[in-house]
Image (cartoon, rainbow, N blue to C red; front, side, top):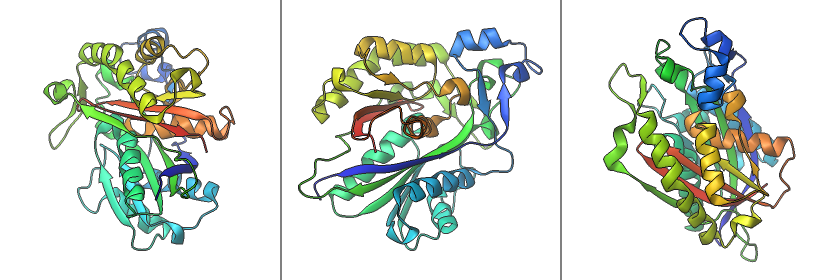
Length: 314
């Protein structure tokens, strides 16, 4: 195979909307303080939906948008850090829910960079001939791991899922997914963590902020270079939806005034591994990015891990 490309996207969010004013009812905060600190106005919070339920709903929409059926899929990969069950994994449960027969199926956990890691892994599998048509999903239920009495973290997170159908390109067709740039800073891995048997999300916000705003722009630029795309050619930039200040800092260093910059976190909060496919799916649904246009994806967060690649918009 010469490469792979994304042919469709889909997303799912719970119906319950929790605004900043709602949060201010049970912790000392305000809409103004939250917007100024992280740029979030609201987030979606799941009820009975599991990570697998949300992942399957997003994947089902992506599959329908691709014009494919479950019989066409031979690989399912789910990026998540909030699955409660150790086994069976979320990917197998998604396959069962969608009726996908005997696919390769595994979960991948690099927290907020998970979707970009999973997309890179699936691209490699297709290039190696191990898969022809795959579904890549980012899905999180962070509300189950949120301390709702801690105003420094409970204002940040939301639930949801986003999915992409990825297929092999023809021999004479240019790849639609560029080489992945990925890595980690393991000595700072405790800066964002979900630890123990009854865990809450905890993070050292200033450590993450300094790292993200100083170290990531050169790595994002490297992803462009590996894809043979100058940043000035980007139609859109879809970073992990962590914090508007972090996003603005990376954008400033990339110098991409022509690109649409996804800021879905305003209405969705930080959805970790789901944030990139969720934001990209909405951009495509609203037809804000032309088909075939180059889009830079870049995830970063817990671990500390990072991953990014340039893709062609489906």
